[in-house]
Image 1 (cartoon, one colour):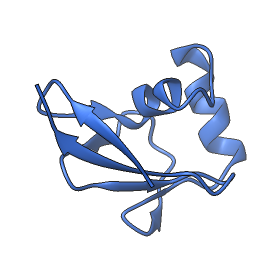
Image 2: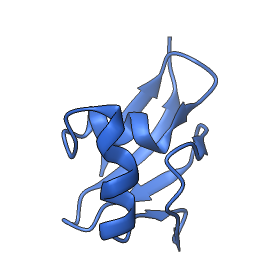
Image 3: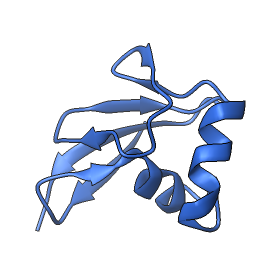
Image 4: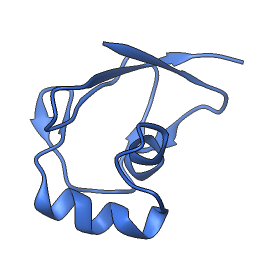
Length: 72
């Protein structure tokens, strides 16, 4: 499980996909989420604008997991 330190109160699921190098541009997020099952806190979510807050967990179809942490 990898940690993502948030520099803002939250990031969106689309932003996380860019951080994780799953997509190369924000425009690909909608397509990626329609083609892949991404779980947020154990539930499939396909909203690229889904806000991720500290302690949220995201699981990608390739098995990678990310946990959001408050950072500076």
